Length: 315
Image (cartoon, rainbow, N blue to C red; front, side, top):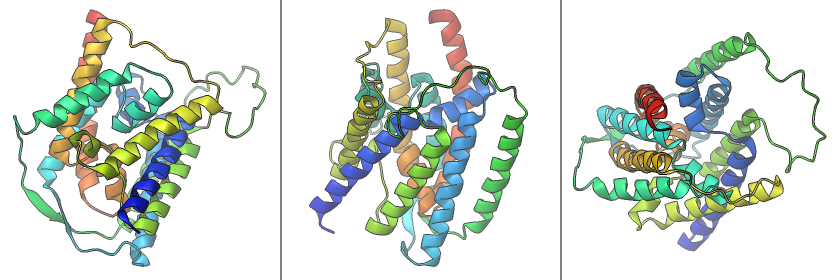
């Protein structure tokens, strides 16, 4: 596949992902933030399903040697943990991750411009205030233990969720408008995203990334990010949800800007975001995403505390 063909494919893949994210509202931020703020686990369950399907797909690719490669450079465990923690604090404050900022902007949320501007600033701030965790080789590993653990975690979360009250079940069902126009359950989004990622990796041998686009030199990440923007727009148009929405007041905008700075900086420390560091790392069976997500769980807890205090004071 030539470089031009690869860019074209990444643009298509980003568009499909943006559409899926928009229709299903699948969201890493909600999976972590809602756990701490509202004790809600619906989105956590969907993200765990996404992880389970992605790692399972990566295991089959490894067995078929579809993605065979030697060890590649990546952050140390401490660097991945720290990057995930910083990024998670930022995305809880911003209310969106890097991919979410693009597809939400596509559906008309102008507030995402503050997040993207902050990420650009945080990306370029990193060389001025570098945290340089040592790079190490990232060997692949046997994924079946991770598959079993993720399946157990998904079962526990599903059992807990099943015991909670079903709010809204007494409301009359709305008339269905078709698959593309009807909102999707987040579990559908997780299934489609996993299939897209595994198929794309098997087809091209290359994963996805978003935050590298803010370096202004990585055309692959830029193509994928533009696709997310276009996919968010298409999803909103199909669902009749496209509407240009103004950013809001000064305080929320400044909080989003600060969150974006932390995300841009954290992505440089941890070598990626929820798409590049986590999902792509999982399908390639790298240990990096596990350290990254461990840091993100800790960072989201801190971010939830900060956000709660900011809400009481300014919002």
